[in-house]
Image 1 (cartoon, helix red, strand yellow):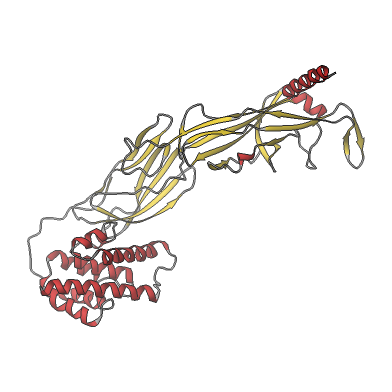
Image 2: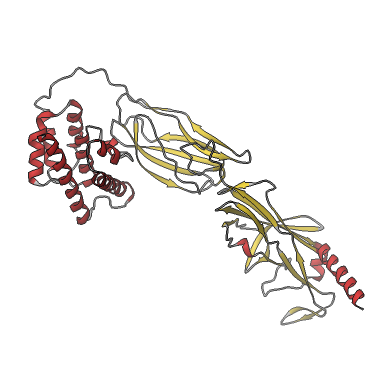
Length: 436
């Protein structure tokens, strides 16, 4: 009897596999950390059998009532799961949800549902195989209230094989310094909103990125453009086109084009570092003629003095007078130009005034002040490490508020007090140097 029961169980199991099958499809190659991996849930059903004998499993009636259990489909301990939602298709139950699947086939109905896995660390992972459950009967009774009621219901379970995923770390050999985590294959295009911006006048450089891979997940690229300062960026991480808008400004009047821009990425499945590039963009500006050195004229003095009165809002009276008396007579031509530009900025704009002050003290364009190297530049001018870092952090905070906040005119009293204190400390250093 036991032998007969075992044989019957095998026969029913084989028959259940013929009527329904479930499996997972995934990459046969090794993938890398951070790479989106497409995994497909594949279901095959005997159309004629299910249309005639299938028993509904839930109150919501389905054309092909099957229930698939796949615990890691929504939550995976080793990384992120990104299901691809189908808006239309044949419905079936997946875990606790009812989902729509792509469908096809004639005698054998094929249902497919996709998701992307993104591993956060290297390793070999075994993804549990899917379990498909369905019920069938050969005899039914029609009931006015309950509908079609099975008289000899039989429940079946079909199991699919597990999927092994091998994840390697991103190689360090050959990794470009500008790499920010893009993995896949991409192309880029760039454009500008204006071609006639003056020196230190910001304009927008837009980069669009398209391709396959982790398009919306890699960090915003860091641009380093010769002759330009990158003030800030706004990154729209939408698919299928990612748009990154960089606020840039020329710092050198001799620069007449935006240099070529590139995006470094790790190309799969070739598993090599590569780059996508966009050509240089010509600007409608002319390089300035070579100027002879001239002395400051009387009309320049009111503009220069206006800046000093503006900076007076940042300095204590004593420090401001020291700055005015000691340094006004020792301005270089470049510092005079910087002051003339800063004099046109309204004093209430704390970010503009603070940046203008630092530009004068460091003898550089204002756009250069708003840079990651500000702390290092201040250190080179003899400022202590802590004070240099404090000043750089406040510049970054104020500029970020200017370019990202909806109300960029409002500065908290505490921030204004902190900036005044920083300027007082900087002036104490520079006045001491001037007296030495």
